[in-house]
Image (tube, rainbow, N blue to C red; front, top):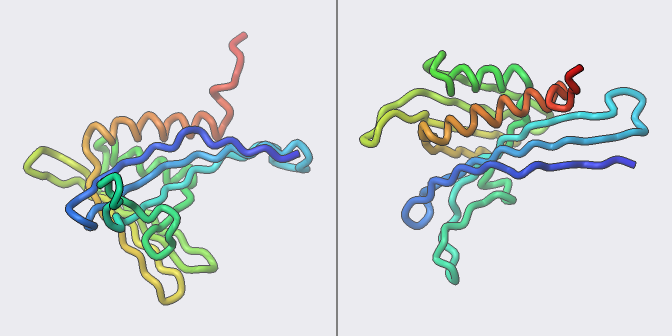
Length: 169
């Protein structure tokens, strides 16, 4: 019987005014399939970016379009994508562009070093084109958020290769 584990998602929220904010989420998915002939365990990492879609009338908190395809874009990250992200997050590259294409369209994620009044950040943009529909999401990633992402991406690599589960002899 197939079993799917989803460790706690890491989200970065950047709400602004009524609805000009954005957010990103990183979700790992571990699938165990003991009946599979090959690859009985697979580990995937998804990066979802969404626009702010307003303010919740009751709570006054920002609302985001996580489940709305017209407001969000998703990219499934491969190992080389994770390596590229680590290069910019660790300051070894100035800019990174990830490009993915599938039957529905394409998704592009860009990270670029930038300077704001409060200090250095990474400008993040993700755009996804599905048929004629285009979704664009953009926000900054702070240095503190970058440090968390570095650790999470390294943990993904370890989980992907089952290195965290090895016993030392």
